Amino acid sequence: MSALHFTDANFKKEVLESELPVLVDFWAAWCGPCKMIGPVIEELAKEYAGKMKIGKVDVDNNSKVATEYGVMSIPTLIFFKKGKVMNQMVGAASKPDLKRKIEENL
Image (tube, rainbow, N blue to C red; front, side, top):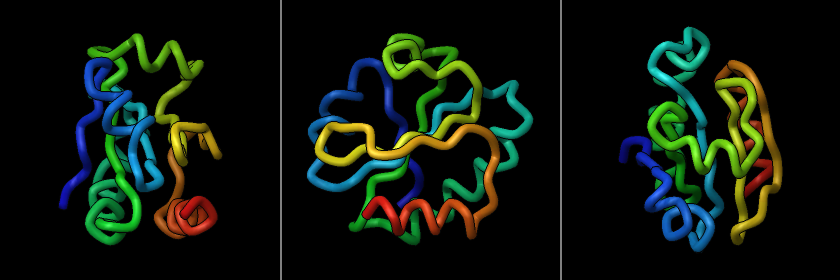
């Protein structure tokens, strides 16, 4: 399973109402660090399928959600559990760092 695409329209259903914990990557196509972690996010989505939903929000096309969660810099990674923000990371992170954060938030 590859990373999901969350939008202003489906965010409530896919993220806030999810039974599973969710990792949301707020990104943009023009963002260098976002491009660096993009493949890692895809790998993690496959590794954690069934345990955690992992997806992306393109901030250029979905500014409502990005604004709602105070995303000022990208990439910003926000962990949600039962509709609540559990944790947040700003900037590119290594795969081991991301895996550690995912494990903390499962």
